[in-house]
Amino acid sequence: MEKGRDIQCVPAEMLARLKALAERLWADNNPSSVHLTALLEEFEPDMKALGQIVKEYETEFSSRLSSKEGEFTRKEERLKEKIQTLNSRLSALESEHASGAKKTEELKKAFKDTEVHLGEVRAGAMETEREMNLKYVSKMQELYDRVNKKEQEMLSDWEEKNRTLENRLQALDGDHAERMRQLKFREKALGEDARARKAELIRTFDRIREDLDARERSVAARERALAYWKKTGSGETGKGEQ
Picture 1 (spheres, rainbow, N blue to C red):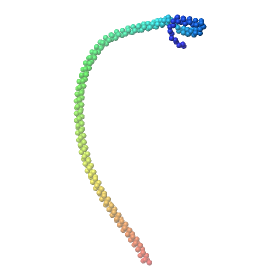
Picture 2: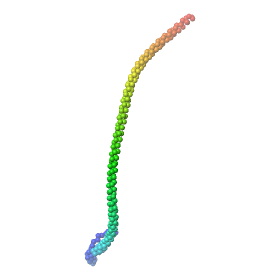
Picture 3: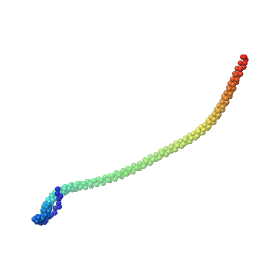
């Protein structure tokens, strides 16, 4: 595809003179005529006269103008229809506005009446709330007094029980101390008795051991005497038999 060229208006006289020059050069056997003729043939399709360009422009402009006029006419008709529709809607809205204004006045009156009633209700509610607050304060004070009284009674009972418990603890401590003193005294007495019994047992054991030793010595002496007697008695018996 050939690249498009910029088209400019070329005077017809200039084109004719260039063609005449090319013919003279050709007649003179000038090689430049070939080059000039080739250029004229190459660019001749793109060369247009001023009148032709103006006619083409007028034709295109007329076509575009007709198209725009038709488009404008259609747009104007649509706008007229839209204006008519809007006028109809405006009339309806004005009628509705008149009716709405009446309703607005009625609503304003009802709103004012409601505000008055609401003010009365609020005043009654505030009075009721004040009475309830007074009753609440009275009940709370009564409850506080009862709780405080109960707390004082419980505190007195606790203090009394605490004193009783402390007295019992003191009595138990005294009894415990007395028992410990008696136990220590008894322990001391038992220790002394045990030591005395032990000493007596040792003395008894020593006496028994001494007695046993004496008996053993006596038995040993008797045995020696018996042995001696047997020995001496046997000798005397033999002599008599002879």
